[in-house]
Image (cartoon, rainbow over all chains, first blue to last red; front, side):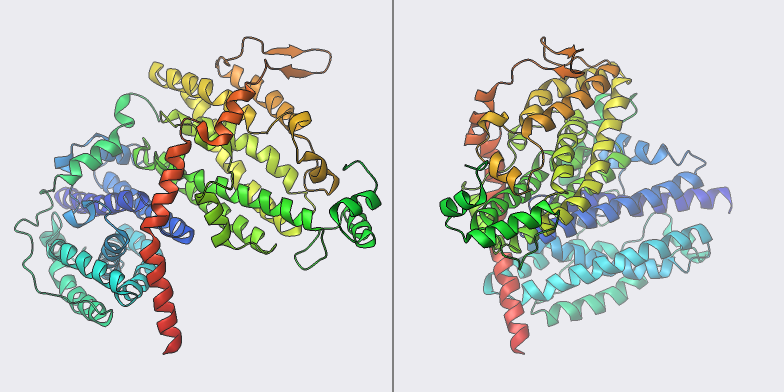
Length: 255
Length: 322
């Protein structure tokens, strides 16, 4: 692969990893605070997997940049400024209530299933191999988050109202899934990555139908004005400050 | 009472003397008591008390370390800590199931915890104030728990014994990651060395208290030992822990907060100064540094989750009826 494309692909992968890292961070906040003990276990497991996947993508990104895969991922996580993160805003929003967290997880997992399916066909073999590996775990995530949607959508009046409120709040942010990742256009033309817009079309149809079956109203609401991955809410700097707080106490230390 | 012969005990506990004698004979032969088997009511009561306390300790024990997951200073440490706290939730789950085999329900046990009637390990009522506390908890607190749990893995009640075998394997991993962290930081930068010294200074005495009161002041020990639930006393286990940890911590250059600590040539034991039992009883009675916060966090999670549990139950009923 030529140098410029390697560089572009590393940027794409780091953005993908940022999504996983930040979503995993939010999931991990439930550990010890979930509604039932089984969900403490499940959400800690989701967080473990998401952060584990982030690590795999950061490592491949490091490789493509000719960086050391054992140390570069931590440099990226702990020593970038918030404005340098390329995650979508959907994943950085505070965890909210159980309806908000499970619904966000479902919306993201359903998209990720499609993206990983496509990435596992990538013409760049190292990428295809990692995508295939991650995909097996993500299918369990989807099964788990998918089970909660009708349970809460159709459970009680209160759970329905909370799910509808969560959907109304999340839907504009979820439109950000359609936005291209860094370098996507060229990488897509080269058969390395899928088109986010095309995946979004499929996602939109599948997800809308599933939500309606779970008793929820999907309203066509305008997406956020700025869906670019360099734009963030005020929640990201606070999250990054927490994430980096120990590592930055002593940047020279090996933790 | 519990050094007495079986007939006297049968009278005092209002149990059938023959059944009690057979039960004790089974334990003496090293057989495991299983859920459907005959057992004295007091054996059942003591086990429910211990196993549910143990389960609560795992669940409350998620909080002090759980607060550091988002702050873990490398991806490796973050994944380890997440896996560890997840294991604790899993241990809580096995243990609630083990207690359920004795007829207790999870709801009853949780209610007892939330109403402040059930106890959990007093160690979790201390604050985790720096990242290095996670290392101290792994090496000291989990190390102490393993000694107790290794003993319980041999206990006479089958489901508890088997849960302990599995839990001990995972706890060993927890201890090792803490030990690795403390050793690494004790050779690290001045910031890390100071952090480790401070953490061990704060966790040392509370960890020694984890083994419970001295044998002479331990009201339940007699019956627990007679019926093979415990096979060693609090003081024996505590001494093993001290003998294991003192040389290893000193090898790291860590100074233990005990001017009276010394090696006793005659017995081959490390001897500590007096444990502050006033502090132990105060923490156990709810007046430790973090008792109120730990219980508030559990009550909050339980209250916040009410609508979720209610919805899940309603949905399950609707699905059944379809």
